[in-house]
Length: 435
Image (cartoon, rainbow, N blue to C red; front, side, top):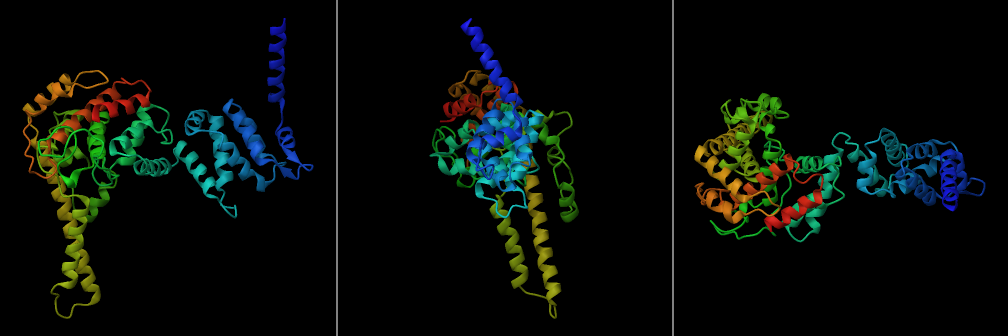
């Protein structure tokens, strides 16, 4: 009997809350006849109601005329402060919650407001990232990843935190986290290359000696081991990227006259008989068989020097200022075109450098590495050593090849859902197998 009475009391309390109007809630958290609203307490209450799934009451209170316009942004901030990033991601799967979040964002970042605080802007940016507003997720995640990079002790730990961290925004799935990480670290120039954020090789096992152990790069110009690793992950996780039209390629062609293809496959002239995964794998292996193209800084310097040479070198007599500017611009355009062609030729050479025997050795190494949470890299290494590498060539090393193998293996595990939805387990896998 006592238990039944308790259940009835709970049910009555729930019904009472559900019958509450927005005006009831505002009145309860107001003083002086409604002249003063306890914004923090009201926001805390609304946050609790939202976390219980009652998004409508939050929307009704924020919309209510009884809540003064100058209180609404502070109540919105206080409400949002009740949610963790995973809370917001989970809520965003519900359309009513999306409407609530849109309203909260608008109140915090309304351009009619005379002042938007840093906290309001940050929380508004978070909502935009979670709701995947154009560009918002990449901007949020890039800022967060740079914070991670600058706050952890090693580059390997930064890599692990890309999965471990709760403030990186995704769609709540492990595949979504991987896509978010790849989206932020992608190169702006080369599709499939994940060197958009500069990392190093600290924390990775091994040494930097040519032919040495582990995963540390002997070449100072290519020591972004986080980016190198993620490149292998991405090529295995989404091999179809080699067949996707490259954004903006038409504009590049209209400006420079190159390249001739719209996709990576077309540019490297991959045979039609090869699958996208075959092409991605040969690029991964061939990356250590032929030298890397010049880096972004070297390319930029070369283009600038071409312009300087034209501007300050010998000039035609009676040349006008406009004619000189056109001549300098043309020289820089010609050098840019030359650099683009050189980069494409370098990637084509890397693709062609990978032989059928190299692919066979790689596949044996993958098999030898095993299926467990701890890879047997000792068993895989003799097979990898069958792939000949000239360590003197720019960016080529056995360490990078090992790193690519582990990245490719992780891509396979992610595609096969081996980790379920447990990104913390992926972070632990990274620390175990790369440290």
